[in-house]
View 1 (tube, rainbow, N blue to C red):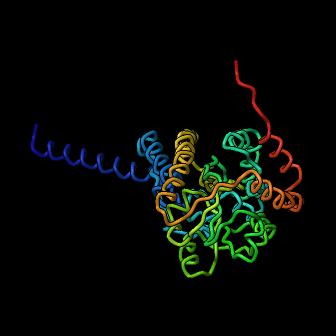
View 2 (cartoon, rainbow, N blue to C red; view 1 turned 180 degrees about the horizontal axis):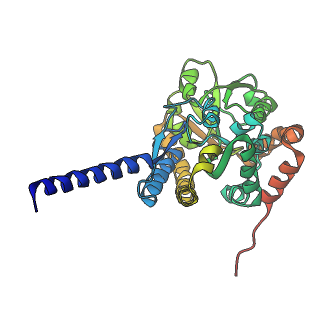
Length: 339
């Protein structure tokens, strides 16, 4: 073979290789996944598990860039960024969706709505939860899954055992009319702050206390600035994994299935991790010896429930009586064991 022919073949081979590389780069779909939780929380770990699963299953046709802990957007801004297409995926707390006209999701903030994790799963994995996610499509969003955060505790620099103990306290909440009414029903003054502002606000006494899950309380080191915690389990904190609808509709069907499968597996992983780590975080708070942990007695629990019961009635008109009743009925349904 002549030298000129060899050179021609080498050049042709390099050209084809370069073209394949360019095509490959052009067909790599990038998902910017923004969320506000720390990387070592269940949400943070579930996001990384999703990244690993989807990149592997798609053979790198999809790349997921995860931005945790408010790196791109604050909690109050991330949904708008999603709708505008600045990011493709977010995982906001459920009540945040109400700010974009999805009032149904405020139902998850109602006090004492769920008795346990199984009750939550019946709603989120059942027909009610799926129907609620489908409604997001009219808001230029597609809901893919629910991620558990766990049940909430209350904290302050004084013991919170009875509703009267909340009188006059400035209590931090995330933006939610339900939580505003909840704190007012307890006699407290609700203060809306983004998650990354809580530690400073507590340290500087801008606010007196906070409701949180044990995981978030420990991850944000709030035990350094709060001397008392009450294990009340009065409310539930969950998130929804959401993608931009235009982006989702533009994905080839096989890649949508790849994302769906990866989200499903990451959801199971993250939700199981949340249950385990909430228990572990509560033990770690106790071991810090900086915060006294109190578990409500039956009498105290009954007093809290009585004080918060009117909140559900007050907000039925805003959220929708039908959805409140449907979620309540499903969460209270007891499933018979399979034979």
